[in-house]
Image 1 (cartoon, one colour):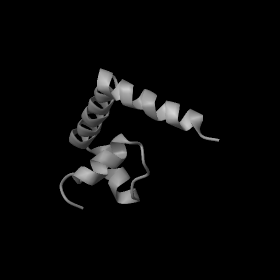
Image 2 (cartoon, rainbow, N blue to C red):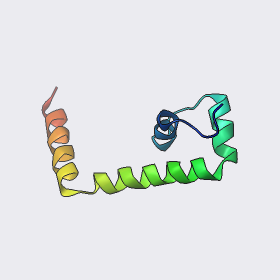
Image 3 (cartoon, rainbow, N blue to C red):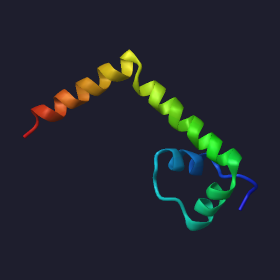
Length: 68
C-alpha cells in the first residue's frame, strides 16, 4: 500500500462505504488519512446545506414522491 490512501479510498471512507481490509487497517492507524476523511465529510455536509443543494434535493424528493 502507498504511504496514504488514494483519493478514491478517502472518498469511499468519507461516504462510509466498505473499504478493502488493508485500506481499513491503514485508516485506523493513520491520523493524516483520518483527518482527510473528516475534512471530506465536513465539506460534503457543508455543501448539502447550501440553498442550491437544498433546492435540488427538494426537487428530487418531489419527483420521487410523484412516482407510483
